Length: 192
Image (cartoon, rainbow, N blue to C red; front, side):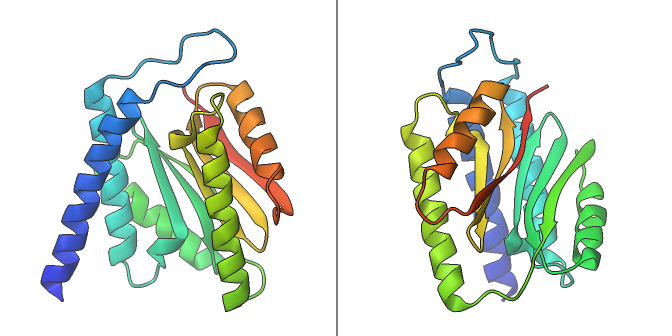
């Protein structure tokens, strides 16, 4: 069991580092003409490592359901998004996240869940999430690799760091256009 967890953590770290390289290579068109804020490859890798460490810490904590969180890091600012069952889980997640080395600040975009989810709703939400992600990837005006998508009872939550307001607006429009989306919750932030 211990070895399996270690392999999970290692594979998560490697995936985070690879994501940092891919994100650094993602060139999306900027509809405002303004250059995006610059980061270095080193910063991208550091942010990927911090994200991976936060995810691992959330997964390792028995009081938190770490799979319900999306973690995005930009220059040490960690954005947590997703859904939790209760306020104590959220409070614990913030404490665990703040304890991770490299976390400078936390942008809390986590929402509390409503009623219990049925298996049918969970499957429907997974399909909606997949369709929203695919539509965002297909849109040239959205830097979709920087946007996390979570769906709960037809409510799509978009989070992450993007270059400008135009990308936020376009991502919201794209998500609203997907069948099964009842509303869109914008938890995206503009890169500093």
